[in-house]
Length: 417
Image 1 (tube, rainbow, N blue to C red):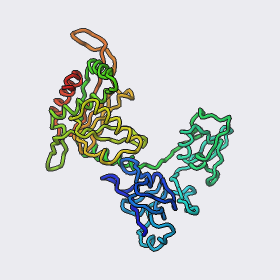
Image 2 (image 1 turned 90 degrees about the vertical axis):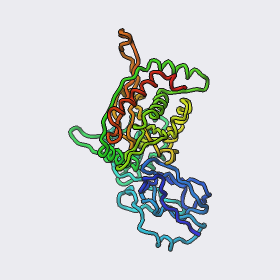
Image 3 (image 1 turned 30 degrees about the vertical axis):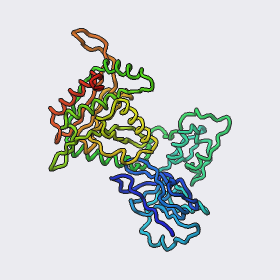
Image 4 (image 1 turned 60 degrees about the horizontal axis):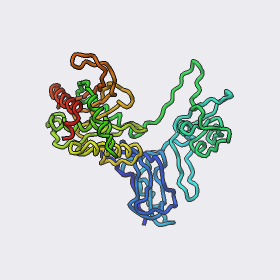
């Protein structure tokens, strides 16, 4: 008997999903636990596994297509089963991506699913001879990643446009190397060029949540400069222990967790009629990924050692970048840390990750002249900026939190007790 598989709700705020990639084709046999597709949600691209077994009889949303939660995604049943009546019963089909020719519907090949990629913008690219060829943005991106010169590819699309499939199927000649310069759009002097790229579900969710936070929570910012000389020496000693690796970010996370226990006002959430005080400390650590930003959460961070923090941050960051992180691993934060120090940024401000009341922006450690005991010497300092929601955290409360944070960072031994 045929089973309807609907678009799953893979996050608490997900309203619709995009099929990033089908991992099976129509006619394939499916076992329970097999991965059916990669679904792009508002938070991440996640693998969606089957809870049923049988044969894939129908695909309701092509690659690149969008569908609301709980609408038809696929149908699984017995091989050769007639599902025509079932398809008639289903509601209006989900929104499909723009097809390659922007006009015609793709025709499924016998026994295979049609795989259509949303390539909504055609981009002109110059050849070395001065002629012009056409390539979709996705084809251009793949060619750039692979170091392929698009002028060497014959396009199969309308007006000889180069598509994703053309690039993936291209075999370079022996004289061609992968060190060629990236292909860029040719724009004659004096002409304007605008390229529009469809926003991902994650990018739209980031825009919505950060916009809501910035315009609803009255932000203010407090910055301090921390002496990191002792922290640097302590980290070197800790990392000299075999099989031990602690980063400066791990020290910051640990210091924040301990400071939050001493300053519960910062570990709160605004709920209009009440202020929620969290006795637990769940710290979110912002991680940059290809499509935007994810915030994995370290549950009960204050109960972790430095090495445990380091191991958990590396594991969760790896999952986030490899699209393996689960919704539960990104929920429940009570405080957030954003660190751009590794990019050389010395000072910046962040937008609060609601429902948190504060977020800490961590800059790079800078070597500079400092005054110690009345003498100018070379020291290492780091600037951190606390963004606070003034509805829950007053200036004095934020300042006291930063004083405690400074004490822990400048005296790391106090965090080992």
